Amino acid sequence: MSDLSLSPTLKRILLEACILVTVAFAVGLSINYQMVLNAFSGKTVSAAPVQKTTQTKVVEELLPNPVEIGEIDEMVAEGAMLIDARNIADYKAGHIKGAISLPIGEAETKLESFRQQVPKEQTLILYCNGFGCHDSFDLGVFLLKVGYQDVLVYEGGFPEWRDQGRAIEEGLQ
Image 1 (cartoon, rainbow, N blue to C red):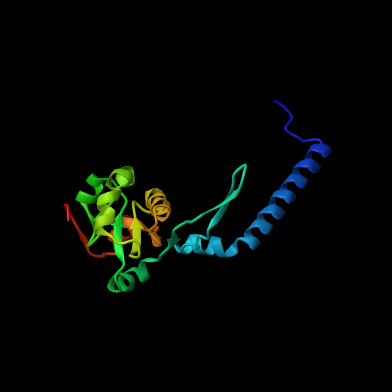
Image 2 (cartoon, rainbow, N blue to C red):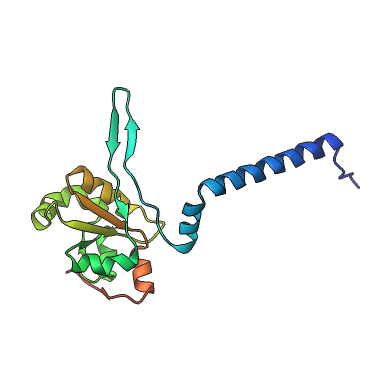
């Protein structure tokens, strides 16, 4: 049978490593506590503009802001438009009532008809397949780049909406 005992030096190194990891975890948690609380409660953290540095200049990239499910009804009543960033098959199978389809994969080709239908000043609420889906965020970045001014992302997306028993519809609208 082999001897599983550790040398005193190895024990000390492992203990120091555990202490370092614990301290780093505690510091990280204390700095990001609000983000962690939001993540566990299903809330979002506001996205601020991000600066990107290229070799010659600093470019500020606009990012869409998040919106919560409880805010959507009031925003739609005030004129906001729901945009489904999922593929057309998912949209046909079921989407938030009143939403129009603009799949991220077709955004560039459908941009001209979208512009004719939706003014740049319109508040847009984009969604896709929930928290793991980045299509609505990517579409939001694209729409901001082409001149839309008020772009929000509903990160809970269609799954959260459906699971809350909210109004959905099927087919093309």
